[in-house]
Image (cartoon, rainbow, N blue to C red):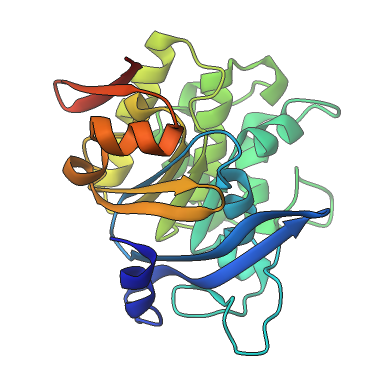
Length: 276
């Protein structure tokens, strides 16, 4: 699906995300250039593209860390679950966000214990302080979320003592305590070795099958889960191609998107890409 087709679907109440010709400047550089995108609620989606294509800026736009340039014609709106105005804490209860930047905040400076890191998600805080009232319901949901990602044995340890994969699972649990409708995962496999990456991806598959919509941002084709049916390819701050894996993960399309000869192959339920 091209940008024009995506725009035709804007403003649907069934959409997780709709963006209408949003442009974002960083310094004197146009990082997102009139980007339009539509992703339906329940539609597991991978957002793929080379370095500099606008993936990180798009994540910040969705997370309300950046805002598009204002336009007199009304374009540039970013709607999440049908709304363009959100209290950020309220938004986090519907759309959980996990990224290496969030992980760095929890694995450096003042130590934070695993359970406290997860329960602090209810307060949009880094940890627990004396003025936070943790209820029995909150404690139950923390244990539920940790069990869902297989991280219950990590309770009692400091976040800084965890491996990259362990810490990422804890942060996913932190997002899951709200029982969000969707998770935005920004380069979730960064820093993982091959075995840890596969184990981590299998855990994400369970989340996808349990009904949580996944938005997976990556530049590695190998990380696109079998449950993900749609791929959005970014290039030069715009949507270059949007469609099914069969239509987007092809030699010709990826070669054009990455400006290098790419060969795509299948390995079981996963795709892989190598330079030709």
